[in-house]
Image (cartoon, rainbow, N blue to C red):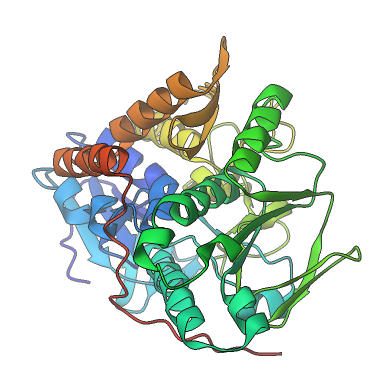
Length: 427
């Protein structure tokens, strides 16, 4: 890998997500050698992936070069690599570009879409966890309407304009709201020779309410917002299968659709060498103690989505969101320094800053620790928070200008089929 030898302890971070970047920044200026690895050379701001999928933003607005994050830091190295295995006995990270010895290892590889073992759903539905997946979805949505113009088959046209989103969490709710706004404000102008009123957006939730991690008030208000936008909200229904044309459920309800978007859950990415039952628990996550040390190891740590830490306040582990990853990364940066100085580490205590979700123009819900509010003010708060946590001044400016333009013009000009997507259906 051409990483120079150093008298400083070597800290290897696997993953350039919220946790990995937060940790790397915290280690700046310390007497350590930091090697950050990721299979992409950019950090993705995942909360805004749905806007890439729906043509509201271009992907470079929510991505930031990892090397630029590390610019100016001494003894920092980035390697574009896919990690194959961890040799815990020899303290080696095995990758597709070679192997590297570590003194301390931090796993921050994040999560992936969880299809709960359903192969048909995995092969035939669309996920939205990465920028390439979001671009595929954007292309498919637009291609569906182009194809709907060409077909004389009524049922095929209906299926092409029927979208089913599975999962009533923030991702599913925000995507449903964005699609509803496209149907209302953009499709009639883009496709005047197509009856776009026939387009349907269906949000299917397995539980009895959407946004289950938020308050009942927020859930009810979000559902009201969606229904006013024309979204069909289906609750207490579990999707059982999809063959590329028909969605089957555990009820008599079924959907004919050319597009099923799966947003019903995530699981931690597994890593060979740390995938034994003694290390892994629910959601494929690594069991860690209050200092984010992987159980059974003093020098291996896990943060963010991949870390499962049971506490009295969070008996099922911390939520798999950006804030726990950021906070764990910041504390671990300080703890690693304390560890190398033979000082006691400080246990992690999550500071819950609340949850929020946007449903569309002037429509959002916010659950903050002391306040709960919905509507226009919540929408402005949502925008401010997301702009604040975006990495890079340019990205903040570009996203802000796009939002203002879209708001004034009722438009989404990134609806481009740059890379046509071809579905390969399997049964």
